[in-house]
Image 1 (cartoon, rainbow, N blue to C red):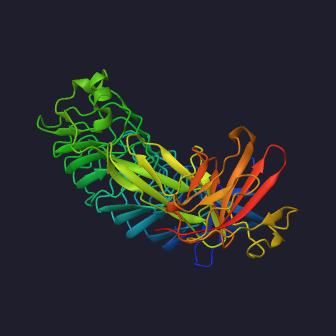
Image 2: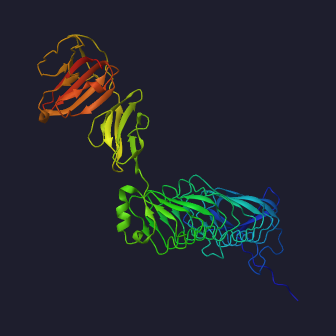
Image 3: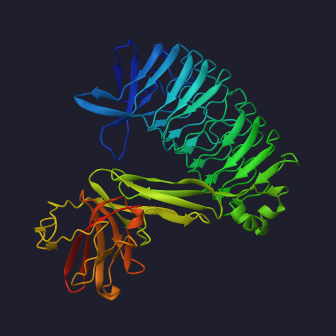
Length: 492
Protein backbone atom coordinates (compact mmCIF):
# COMPACT_ATOMS: atom_id res chain seq x y z
CA UNK A 1 0.00 0.00 0.00
CA UNK A 2 1.54 3.26 -1.06
CA UNK A 3 1.15 6.56 0.80
CA UNK A 4 0.29 9.77 -1.03
CA UNK A 5 3.03 12.35 -0.75
CA UNK A 6 2.00 15.75 0.65
CA UNK A 7 1.56 18.60 -1.82
CA UNK A 8 3.96 21.43 -1.13
CA UNK A 9 2.38 24.88 -0.79
CA UNK A 10 5.53 26.94 -1.18
CA UNK A 11 8.06 28.02 -3.79
CA UNK A 12 11.09 27.87 -1.54
CA UNK A 13 12.08 27.47 2.09
CA UNK A 14 14.54 29.40 4.22
CA UNK A 15 16.13 28.11 7.45
CA UNK A 16 16.17 30.97 9.93
CA UNK A 17 18.81 31.95 12.52
CA UNK A 18 16.22 31.34 15.25
CA UNK A 19 16.31 27.59 14.44
CA UNK A 20 13.04 27.08 12.58
CA UNK A 21 12.30 27.16 8.87
CA UNK A 22 10.02 29.61 7.06
CA UNK A 23 8.30 28.96 3.74
CA UNK A 24 7.70 31.49 0.98
CA UNK A 25 5.69 32.00 -2.19
CA UNK A 26 6.96 34.29 -4.93
CA UNK A 27 4.20 36.77 -5.76
CA UNK A 28 3.17 37.74 -9.26
CA UNK A 29 3.21 41.43 -8.46
CA UNK A 30 3.85 44.70 -10.24
CA UNK A 31 6.92 44.98 -8.04
CA UNK A 32 9.75 42.59 -8.73
CA UNK A 33 11.11 40.10 -6.22
CA UNK A 34 8.41 40.16 -3.54
CA UNK A 35 7.22 37.19 -1.50
CA UNK A 36 4.67 36.15 1.09
CA UNK A 37 5.22 33.86 4.05
CA UNK A 38 3.13 30.70 3.76
CA UNK A 39 2.69 27.19 5.22
CA UNK A 40 4.50 24.07 3.94
CA UNK A 41 1.70 21.59 3.11
CA UNK A 42 -1.19 22.30 0.72
CA UNK A 43 -3.33 19.19 1.28
CA UNK A 44 -5.16 18.20 4.45
CA UNK A 45 -6.63 20.19 7.29
CA UNK A 46 -3.31 20.77 9.03
CA UNK A 47 -0.86 22.72 6.92
CA UNK A 48 2.20 21.98 9.05
CA UNK A 49 1.79 18.19 8.90
CA UNK A 50 5.18 16.52 9.05
CA UNK A 51 7.01 19.83 9.61
CA UNK A 52 8.35 21.45 12.76
CA UNK A 53 6.27 24.56 13.45
CA UNK A 54 8.00 27.77 14.60
CA UNK A 55 8.47 28.32 18.33
CA UNK A 56 9.31 31.18 20.70
CA UNK A 57 9.62 34.60 19.06
CA UNK A 58 8.48 34.45 15.44
CA UNK A 59 10.62 36.84 13.38
CA UNK A 60 9.22 37.74 9.96
CA UNK A 61 12.23 39.18 8.10
CA UNK A 62 12.18 42.18 5.78
CA UNK A 63 14.20 40.29 3.15
CA UNK A 64 15.04 36.71 2.28
CA UNK A 65 17.52 35.29 -0.26
CA UNK A 66 16.93 32.41 -2.67
CA UNK A 67 19.06 31.28 -5.63
CA UNK A 68 21.10 34.47 -5.45
CA UNK A 69 18.05 36.75 -5.53
CA UNK A 70 17.00 38.96 -2.62
CA UNK A 71 13.23 39.08 -2.09
CA UNK A 72 11.27 41.60 -0.03
CA UNK A 73 8.70 40.07 2.34
CA UNK A 74 5.42 41.98 1.89
CA UNK A 75 2.73 39.58 3.08
CA UNK A 76 1.85 36.92 5.62
CA UNK A 77 -0.38 34.54 3.70
CA UNK A 78 -3.75 33.01 4.55
CA UNK A 79 -3.43 30.45 7.37
CA UNK A 80 0.36 30.82 7.29
CA UNK A 81 0.77 30.02 11.00
CA UNK A 82 -2.71 28.80 11.89
CA UNK A 83 -2.58 26.58 14.95
CA UNK A 84 1.13 27.20 15.64
CA UNK A 85 0.60 27.42 19.39
CA UNK A 86 4.29 27.29 20.29
CA UNK A 87 4.81 30.85 19.02
CA UNK A 88 5.07 33.15 22.06
CA UNK A 89 5.63 36.57 20.45
CA UNK A 90 5.70 38.29 17.06
CA UNK A 91 8.36 40.46 15.44
CA UNK A 92 7.01 41.42 12.02
CA UNK A 93 9.16 43.43 9.58
CA UNK A 94 7.99 46.90 8.57
CA UNK A 95 7.90 45.79 4.91
CA UNK A 96 4.81 43.64 5.52
CA UNK A 97 1.67 45.35 4.19
CA UNK A 98 -0.82 42.48 4.37
CA UNK A 99 -1.74 39.90 7.00
CA UNK A 100 -3.95 37.21 5.52
CA UNK A 101 -7.11 35.59 6.85
CA UNK A 102 -6.55 33.14 9.73
CA UNK A 103 -2.80 33.92 9.56
CA UNK A 104 -2.36 33.39 13.31
CA UNK A 105 -5.65 31.60 14.01
CA UNK A 106 -5.64 29.89 17.43
CA UNK A 107 -2.00 30.72 18.15
CA UNK A 108 -2.77 30.47 21.85
CA UNK A 109 0.87 30.73 22.90
CA UNK A 110 1.27 34.37 21.79
CA UNK A 111 1.50 36.51 24.91
CA UNK A 112 1.42 40.25 25.64
CA UNK A 113 1.43 42.93 22.97
CA UNK A 114 1.05 42.59 19.20
CA UNK A 115 2.17 45.45 16.94
CA UNK A 116 0.52 46.17 13.60
CA UNK A 117 3.08 48.01 11.42
CA UNK A 118 2.65 51.35 9.67
CA UNK A 119 2.58 49.87 6.15
CA UNK A 120 -0.18 47.31 6.78
CA UNK A 121 -3.18 48.04 4.54
CA UNK A 122 -5.17 44.85 5.06
CA UNK A 123 -5.76 42.36 7.89
CA UNK A 124 -7.82 39.32 6.92
CA UNK A 125 -10.82 37.89 8.75
CA UNK A 126 -10.01 36.09 11.98
CA UNK A 127 -6.30 36.78 11.45
CA UNK A 128 -5.68 36.61 15.22
CA UNK A 129 -8.86 34.79 16.23
CA UNK A 130 -8.53 32.81 19.44
CA UNK A 131 -5.11 34.19 20.39
CA UNK A 132 -6.13 34.08 24.01
CA UNK A 133 -2.81 35.38 25.39
CA UNK A 134 -2.78 38.74 23.57
CA UNK A 135 -3.36 41.51 26.12
CA UNK A 136 -2.75 44.65 24.04
CA UNK A 137 -2.53 45.82 20.43
CA UNK A 138 -0.30 48.65 19.21
CA UNK A 139 -2.06 49.68 16.01
CA UNK A 140 0.28 51.77 13.82
CA UNK A 141 -1.20 51.05 10.37
CA UNK A 142 -1.50 54.44 8.66
CA UNK A 143 -4.05 53.57 5.98
CA UNK A 144 -5.47 50.15 6.80
CA UNK A 145 -8.49 49.47 4.56
CA UNK A 146 -9.90 46.28 6.09
CA UNK A 147 -9.90 44.09 9.18
CA UNK A 148 -12.19 41.14 8.62
CA UNK A 149 -15.52 42.32 7.34
CA UNK A 150 -18.16 40.91 9.71
CA UNK A 151 -18.87 40.97 13.43
CA UNK A 152 -18.16 37.26 13.85
CA UNK A 153 -14.98 37.18 11.76
CA UNK A 154 -13.21 40.28 13.02
CA UNK A 155 -9.42 40.13 13.08
CA UNK A 156 -9.08 39.97 16.89
CA UNK A 157 -12.22 38.00 17.70
CA UNK A 158 -11.88 35.53 20.53
CA UNK A 159 -8.87 37.32 22.04
CA UNK A 160 -10.33 37.05 25.53
CA UNK A 161 -7.39 38.66 27.36
CA UNK A 162 -7.21 41.72 25.08
CA UNK A 163 -7.72 44.82 27.26
CA UNK A 164 -6.10 47.81 25.52
CA UNK A 165 -5.61 49.19 22.02
CA UNK A 166 -3.19 52.06 21.39
CA UNK A 167 -2.92 53.98 18.14
CA UNK A 168 0.16 55.37 16.40
CA UNK A 169 0.45 59.10 15.79
CA UNK A 170 0.02 58.75 12.00
CA UNK A 171 -3.04 56.49 11.84
CA UNK A 172 -5.66 57.99 9.48
CA UNK A 173 -8.24 55.18 9.34
CA UNK A 174 -9.85 52.76 11.73
CA UNK A 175 -11.26 50.13 9.35
CA UNK A 176 -14.75 48.69 9.28
CA UNK A 177 -15.30 46.04 11.98
CA UNK A 178 -11.86 46.73 13.45
CA UNK A 179 -12.67 45.95 17.10
CA UNK A 180 -16.38 45.13 16.97
CA UNK A 181 -17.76 43.15 19.89
CA UNK A 182 -14.60 43.29 21.98
CA UNK A 183 -16.28 43.94 25.31
CA UNK A 184 -13.09 42.90 27.10
CA UNK A 185 -11.44 46.18 26.10
CA UNK A 186 -11.12 48.34 29.20
CA UNK A 187 -9.46 51.70 28.60
CA UNK A 188 -10.42 55.34 28.21
CA UNK A 189 -11.02 56.78 24.76
CA UNK A 190 -7.85 58.22 23.23
CA UNK A 191 -8.16 58.34 19.44
CA UNK A 192 -5.16 59.70 17.46
CA UNK A 193 -5.19 63.32 16.25
CA UNK A 194 -4.24 62.15 12.75
CA UNK A 195 -7.48 60.18 12.33
CA UNK A 196 -9.68 61.00 9.31
CA UNK A 197 -12.17 58.12 9.06
CA UNK A 198 -13.84 55.78 11.56
CA UNK A 199 -15.31 52.71 9.87
CA UNK A 200 -18.66 51.05 10.32
CA UNK A 201 -18.93 48.87 13.43
CA UNK A 202 -15.35 49.91 14.30
CA UNK A 203 -16.01 49.84 18.06
CA UNK A 204 -19.60 48.57 18.17
CA UNK A 205 -20.56 46.67 21.34
CA UNK A 206 -17.34 47.65 23.15
CA UNK A 207 -19.23 48.13 26.39
CA UNK A 208 -16.27 48.87 28.65
CA UNK A 209 -14.31 51.59 26.82
CA UNK A 210 -15.15 54.56 29.01
CA UNK A 211 -14.99 58.32 29.32
CA UNK A 212 -15.46 61.29 27.02
CA UNK A 213 -15.41 60.24 23.37
CA UNK A 214 -13.60 63.08 21.55
CA UNK A 215 -13.66 62.60 17.80
CA UNK A 216 -10.37 64.07 16.44
CA UNK A 217 -10.41 67.31 14.45
CA UNK A 218 -9.60 65.77 11.06
CA UNK A 219 -12.42 63.21 11.05
CA UNK A 220 -15.01 64.01 8.38
CA UNK A 221 -16.92 60.72 8.23
CA UNK A 222 -18.12 58.25 10.88
CA UNK A 223 -19.45 54.95 9.57
CA UNK A 224 -22.70 53.25 10.51
CA UNK A 225 -22.87 51.66 13.97
CA UNK A 226 -19.29 52.78 14.62
CA UNK A 227 -19.92 53.20 18.38
CA UNK A 228 -23.26 51.39 18.72
CA UNK A 229 -23.97 50.18 22.26
CA UNK A 230 -20.78 51.58 23.74
CA UNK A 231 -22.49 51.89 27.09
CA UNK A 232 -19.59 53.38 29.04
CA UNK A 233 -19.25 56.54 26.90
CA UNK A 234 -20.20 59.54 29.07
CA UNK A 235 -20.01 62.38 26.49
CA UNK A 236 -19.54 62.77 22.74
CA UNK A 237 -17.57 65.63 21.17
CA UNK A 238 -17.83 66.11 17.40
CA UNK A 239 -15.22 68.32 15.65
CA UNK A 240 -15.63 71.37 13.42
CA UNK A 241 -14.83 69.43 10.28
CA UNK A 242 -17.30 66.57 10.69
CA UNK A 243 -19.47 66.28 7.57
CA UNK A 244 -21.26 62.93 7.71
CA UNK A 245 -22.43 60.53 10.41
CA UNK A 246 -24.00 57.31 9.16
CA UNK A 247 -26.90 55.21 10.48
CA UNK A 248 -26.93 54.34 14.17
CA UNK A 249 -23.37 55.53 14.70
CA UNK A 250 -24.06 56.16 18.42
CA UNK A 251 -27.04 53.84 18.81
CA UNK A 252 -27.90 53.04 22.44
CA UNK A 253 -24.89 54.73 23.99
CA UNK A 254 -26.94 54.86 27.14
CA UNK A 255 -24.25 56.42 29.37
CA UNK A 256 -24.02 59.64 27.34
CA UNK A 257 -25.10 62.81 29.16
CA UNK A 258 -24.27 65.40 26.50
CA UNK A 259 -23.31 65.70 22.85
CA UNK A 260 -21.15 68.69 21.89
CA UNK A 261 -21.02 69.59 18.20
CA UNK A 262 -18.42 72.14 17.01
CA UNK A 263 -19.33 72.04 13.29
CA UNK A 264 -20.76 75.34 12.03
CA UNK A 265 -22.59 73.54 9.22
CA UNK A 266 -24.92 70.77 10.45
CA UNK A 267 -23.34 67.39 9.58
CA UNK A 268 -25.35 65.04 7.40
CA UNK A 269 -27.06 62.44 9.60
CA UNK A 270 -28.14 58.93 8.71
CA UNK A 271 -31.12 57.28 10.39
CA UNK A 272 -31.25 56.74 14.18
CA UNK A 273 -27.75 58.16 14.70
CA UNK A 274 -28.55 59.00 18.35
CA UNK A 275 -31.43 56.55 18.84
CA UNK A 276 -31.54 54.95 22.27
CA UNK A 277 -29.78 57.79 24.08
CA UNK A 278 -31.60 58.97 27.18
CA UNK A 279 -34.28 61.62 26.75
CA UNK A 280 -32.46 64.18 28.93
CA UNK A 281 -29.27 64.24 26.83
CA UNK A 282 -28.33 67.82 25.88
CA UNK A 283 -27.09 68.54 22.34
CA UNK A 284 -24.88 71.67 22.29
CA UNK A 285 -24.26 73.30 18.90
CA UNK A 286 -22.47 76.57 17.95
CA UNK A 287 -24.59 79.58 18.85
CA UNK A 288 -23.59 81.41 15.71
CA UNK A 289 -25.29 78.77 13.53
CA UNK A 290 -27.92 77.25 15.82
CA UNK A 291 -30.62 78.46 13.42
CA UNK A 292 -29.09 76.30 10.70
CA UNK A 293 -29.43 73.27 12.95
CA UNK A 294 -33.04 74.11 13.81
CA UNK A 295 -33.85 74.44 10.12
CA UNK A 296 -32.07 71.21 9.15
CA UNK A 297 -34.47 68.39 8.29
CA UNK A 298 -32.32 65.90 10.21
CA UNK A 299 -31.26 67.96 13.22
CA UNK A 300 -34.52 69.74 14.01
CA UNK A 301 -36.02 66.42 15.16
CA UNK A 302 -33.52 66.17 18.01
CA UNK A 303 -34.78 67.24 21.42
CA UNK A 304 -32.76 69.49 23.71
CA UNK A 305 -30.93 71.25 20.89
CA UNK A 306 -29.16 74.07 22.68
CA UNK A 307 -26.20 76.38 22.65
CA UNK A 308 -23.96 77.66 25.40
CA UNK A 309 -23.65 81.35 26.30
CA UNK A 310 -21.52 83.33 25.74
CA UNK A 311 -20.85 81.94 22.30
CA UNK A 312 -17.16 81.66 21.53
CA UNK A 313 -15.20 81.44 18.31
CA UNK A 314 -11.52 80.74 17.73
CA UNK A 315 -9.52 83.61 16.25
CA UNK A 316 -6.97 81.91 14.01
CA UNK A 317 -3.97 83.70 12.49
CA UNK A 318 -0.88 82.28 10.82
CA UNK A 319 2.38 83.57 9.42
CA UNK A 320 3.31 82.73 5.83
CA UNK A 321 6.74 81.50 6.96
CA UNK A 322 7.01 79.82 10.36
CA UNK A 323 10.64 80.92 10.65
CA UNK A 324 9.73 84.57 10.18
CA UNK A 325 7.81 85.30 13.37
CA UNK A 326 4.73 84.80 15.50
CA UNK A 327 1.34 86.40 16.08
CA UNK A 328 -0.04 87.34 19.49
CA UNK A 329 -3.69 87.87 20.33
CA UNK A 330 -5.10 84.69 18.80
CA UNK A 331 -7.37 82.46 20.86
CA UNK A 332 -10.99 82.02 21.87
CA UNK A 333 -13.27 85.09 21.97
CA UNK A 334 -16.94 85.81 22.47
CA UNK A 335 -18.81 86.51 19.24
CA UNK A 336 -18.69 90.26 18.56
CA UNK A 337 -15.70 90.80 20.82
CA UNK A 338 -12.78 92.90 19.54
CA UNK A 339 -9.33 91.33 19.45
CA UNK A 340 -5.90 92.78 18.73
CA UNK A 341 -3.42 90.75 16.68
CA UNK A 342 0.25 91.76 16.67
CA UNK A 343 2.85 90.32 14.32
CA UNK A 344 6.22 89.81 16.02
CA UNK A 345 9.05 89.51 13.48
CA UNK A 346 12.08 87.33 14.11
CA UNK A 347 15.53 88.67 13.30
CA UNK A 348 16.06 88.93 9.57
CA UNK A 349 12.39 89.12 8.66
CA UNK A 350 9.78 91.81 8.22
CA UNK A 351 5.98 92.05 8.04
CA UNK A 352 4.66 92.90 4.58
CA UNK A 353 0.92 92.91 5.28
CA UNK A 354 -2.11 90.64 5.64
CA UNK A 355 -3.31 88.39 2.84
CA UNK A 356 -6.56 90.39 2.55
CA UNK A 357 -4.62 93.57 1.78
CA UNK A 358 -4.75 95.13 5.24
CA UNK A 359 -1.37 96.40 6.48
CA UNK A 360 -2.16 97.29 10.10
CA UNK A 361 0.16 95.94 12.75
CA UNK A 362 -1.19 95.69 15.40
CA UNK A 363 -4.55 94.91 13.78
CA UNK A 364 -7.90 95.13 15.57
CA UNK A 365 -10.63 92.78 14.34
CA UNK A 366 -14.16 91.94 15.43
CA UNK A 367 -14.57 88.20 15.98
CA UNK A 368 -17.79 87.22 14.27
CA UNK A 369 -16.82 84.47 11.85
CA UNK A 370 -14.25 81.74 11.32
CA UNK A 371 -11.87 83.63 9.03
CA UNK A 372 -8.23 82.58 9.19
CA UNK A 373 -5.90 85.57 8.95
CA UNK A 374 -2.56 85.19 7.20
CA UNK A 375 0.38 87.52 7.87
CA UNK A 376 2.66 87.78 4.83
CA UNK A 377 6.29 87.79 5.90
CA UNK A 378 9.42 88.56 3.92
CA UNK A 379 13.17 88.63 4.48
CA UNK A 380 14.22 91.98 5.93
CA UNK A 381 15.57 94.44 3.40
CA UNK A 382 18.88 95.56 4.83
CA UNK A 383 19.86 99.22 4.83
CA UNK A 384 23.55 99.34 4.09
CA UNK A 385 24.19 102.52 6.03
CA UNK A 386 22.23 105.28 7.73
CA UNK A 387 23.69 108.74 7.52
CA UNK A 388 22.23 111.97 8.65
CA UNK A 389 21.07 115.27 7.29
CA UNK A 390 21.55 115.86 3.54
CA UNK A 391 23.93 112.93 3.15
CA UNK A 392 23.47 110.43 0.31
CA UNK A 393 23.80 106.65 0.01
CA UNK A 394 22.15 103.68 -1.69
CA UNK A 395 19.65 101.19 -0.31
CA UNK A 396 19.78 97.42 -1.01
CA UNK A 397 22.39 97.93 -3.65
CA UNK A 398 19.72 99.44 -5.88
CA UNK A 399 20.38 102.51 -8.02
CA UNK A 400 18.13 104.61 -5.84
CA UNK A 401 19.44 107.88 -4.47
CA UNK A 402 18.48 108.29 -0.83
CA UNK A 403 17.94 111.74 0.64
CA UNK A 404 17.77 111.64 4.43
CA UNK A 405 15.93 114.30 6.41
CA UNK A 406 16.04 114.05 10.17
CA UNK A 407 12.91 115.45 11.75
CA UNK A 408 12.91 115.10 15.51
CA UNK A 409 10.64 116.17 18.30
CA UNK A 410 11.69 119.80 18.27
CA UNK A 411 12.19 120.51 14.59
CA UNK A 412 9.62 121.87 12.20
CA UNK A 413 8.38 119.64 9.37
CA UNK A 414 10.57 119.92 6.30
CA UNK A 415 8.61 120.44 3.10
CA UNK A 416 10.36 118.24 0.56
CA UNK A 417 9.85 118.60 -3.14
CA UNK A 418 7.46 115.66 -3.27
CA UNK A 419 5.60 116.69 -0.13
CA UNK A 420 6.49 113.62 1.94
CA UNK A 421 6.98 114.99 5.47
CA UNK A 422 6.87 113.91 9.09
CA UNK A 423 4.20 115.83 10.99
CA UNK A 424 5.56 116.22 14.51
CA UNK A 425 2.30 117.34 16.11
CA UNK A 426 0.21 114.51 14.70
CA UNK A 427 3.13 112.07 14.72
CA UNK A 428 2.51 110.78 11.26
CA UNK A 429 4.26 110.60 7.91
CA UNK A 430 2.22 112.41 5.29
CA UNK A 431 2.27 111.07 1.74
CA UNK A 432 0.29 113.52 -0.43
CA UNK A 433 1.09 111.76 -3.71
CA UNK A 434 -1.97 110.81 -5.77
CA UNK A 435 -2.91 107.23 -4.83
CA UNK A 436 -3.38 106.37 -8.49
CA UNK A 437 0.30 107.06 -9.07
CA UNK A 438 1.60 104.88 -6.21
CA UNK A 439 2.70 101.28 -6.77
CA UNK A 440 3.91 100.59 -3.23
CA UNK A 441 4.71 102.29 0.04
CA UNK A 442 7.09 100.54 2.44
CA UNK A 443 8.28 101.58 5.89
CA UNK A 444 11.60 100.32 7.31
CA UNK A 445 13.07 100.63 10.77
CA UNK A 446 16.74 101.45 11.35
CA UNK A 447 17.59 97.73 11.43
CA UNK A 448 16.44 97.50 7.84
CA UNK A 449 13.31 95.48 8.63
CA UNK A 450 10.22 96.21 6.56
CA UNK A 451 7.56 96.93 9.21
CA UNK A 452 4.75 97.99 6.91
CA UNK A 453 3.78 97.88 3.26
CA UNK A 454 0.62 98.93 1.55
CA UNK A 455 -1.41 102.00 0.76
CA UNK A 456 -2.29 104.44 3.57
CA UNK A 457 -6.05 104.90 3.72
CA UNK A 458 -5.93 108.62 4.45
CA UNK A 459 -2.70 109.69 2.78
CA UNK A 460 -0.52 109.26 5.84
CA UNK A 461 1.24 106.62 7.95
CA UNK A 462 0.30 106.73 11.61
CA UNK A 463 3.58 106.47 13.56
CA UNK A 464 1.89 106.27 16.95
CA UNK A 465 1.72 102.50 16.60
CA UNK A 466 5.48 102.15 16.09
CA UNK A 467 8.23 102.45 18.73
CA UNK A 468 10.38 105.58 18.95
CA UNK A 469 13.21 105.37 16.45
CA UNK A 470 14.49 106.15 13.00
CA UNK A 471 12.46 105.13 9.97
CA UNK A 472 12.80 105.14 6.22
CA UNK A 473 9.72 105.52 4.04
CA UNK A 474 10.05 104.35 0.45
CA UNK A 475 7.43 105.28 -2.17
CA UNK A 476 7.46 103.70 -5.63
CA UNK A 477 5.33 105.29 -8.38
CA UNK A 478 3.96 104.12 -11.68
CA UNK A 479 6.53 106.34 -13.36
CA UNK A 480 9.36 104.08 -12.15
CA UNK A 481 10.33 106.72 -9.64
CA UNK A 482 11.36 105.85 -6.12
CA UNK A 483 11.31 108.45 -3.36
CA UNK A 484 13.01 107.65 -0.06
CA UNK A 485 12.95 109.78 3.08
CA UNK A 486 14.53 109.33 6.52
CA UNK A 487 12.69 110.44 9.66
CA UNK A 488 13.05 110.18 13.40
CA UNK A 489 9.70 109.48 15.05
CA UNK A 490 8.97 109.61 18.77
CA UNK A 491 6.13 107.65 20.37
CA UNK A 492 4.52 109.44 23.29
